[in-house]
Image (cartoon, rainbow, N blue to C red; front, side, top):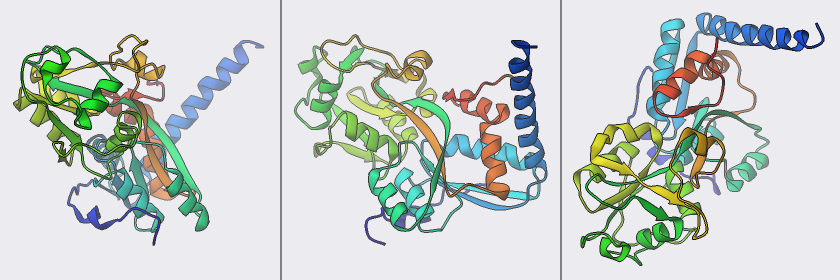
Length: 307
């Protein structure tokens, strides 16, 4: 299967059970009731096993969705594993799973491969996220430009004193290859250059948060869902796209409006339109109950939470 990312890391065990004016308004309300009521009914009547694989950023919250879904559908079995966005899409293209999780847009390479095999990839936008650059809580640096981040992670800047901070070696941490978070950071910050040899690679966002919290000279990047784990020991940095742009924090408003430079969307992907338990599970993730779980995890819901 040339031209498609490897699926060897799929064996990594992240397993879990997982009137004129009034009429349109009335129709919209009725449609919402039918949709969300249907989602709940579909969940209750679902049975069978669904395999979901992919983004490590999404794995914890999709696992929470699976657990909630299975309490509503005792005959269903939703198994969620991580491994990275690339592994999830590759497994989907190889027919190994039912649903892929990706924290980035599908690549042209993946779309081309799907087209060559007559596979119709269908995406579902679950939530919005902002890849957040973090430093240790004791670090006085509060803002960085994307060019400065580029120089840090490619090794051109190696000491915080070069950025008007205290004299300390910069310890950069990055996500491992195959990560959707790493893919977005590499595209928008590194501009597809190589990381410096000093960069240390970690398998999850949670691991990056832990390392940055423990080391005063550290810097890394993470999705919003893992940020809370660092407490006051890590500090999000405001980012500016260029020297003419004002620095922006990763707030819901800035991410939703795309003003935050590292905004992104989290997706579920299927090979063709989903059906059966897979469809019921996706419908649940998009329902108010599912969207509330994404919001509780720190992400920004893509659907209204009103019932």
